[in-house]
Image (cartoon, rainbow, N blue to C red):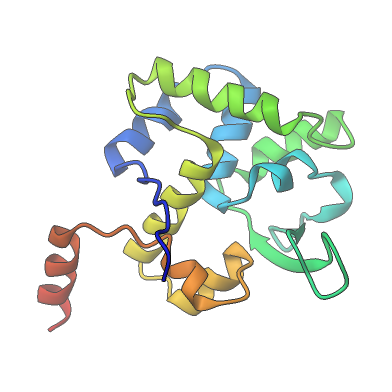
Amino acid sequence: MPYQFRREPLTQDEANRLASVCETHEEKLVVWTLLDTGLRVSELASLDKDKVEWQAHRIMVYGKGGPYGSRTKRRIIPLSPRVQPLIEQHLALHDKIGMSPRTIERIVKRVANRAHIRRPVTPHVLRHTFSVTAIQKGISLPALQRLLGHDRLTTTEIYLNLSPEEVIKEFQSKW
């Protein structure tokens, strides 16, 4: 297999710092949604009222690729209790998120600088962080595959940047 660049996810401490230094509603909306859903930056940017199922606490995402061309692959993402009110407040005033992917990237970078995280933090790093956190909380790899919208399990495995210590700890807890 050819070399695959791996982005390092944030540690739990870094993710908590990032979430806690958000000052505006816009910053919380972007950072918390990316950390709690694993959405791609383009999926967050294109989110609108029609894609949210309020009573079911989930959003419908039409993501990358699909059998009938671009953005035809549909998946359902559950909304966490801290993200749903943010999206509700925003979409009560606006029909859509209304930010470009580049604006979202700038917000993430600004918040990361305020949190004193010195390595590059991008929306995709937050997607990796979501993936590792989900695995650490016990979500199965096939379930994570569906949440991330991957066709192949090998694609999902790229997101599993578990340290040797985490592997040993999990082994010892389950063996």
